[in-house]
Length: 90
Image (cartoon, rainbow, N blue to C red; front, side):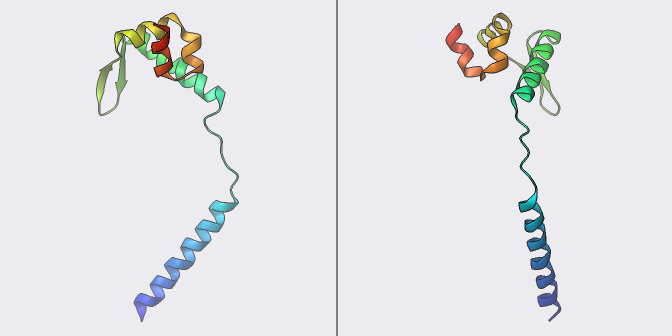
């Protein structure tokens, strides 16, 4: 009997959570402003670490030279487009 009571409480809690989450307005976190900001952070880090990106728990990762050259040569394109597109500029 007690398991059924706890199960009912769990179901009610999940329904309340779904109702609350359904009423929250969507958050558009990846706006162009955020995209450009993150690209600027990457460019700054590449410049400061001689072509390496530093990730916690993963360490330093070397960016391939062709991508690094393209990002440094065409920073405006990098800020507004995905990295694979930069390969077409090389």
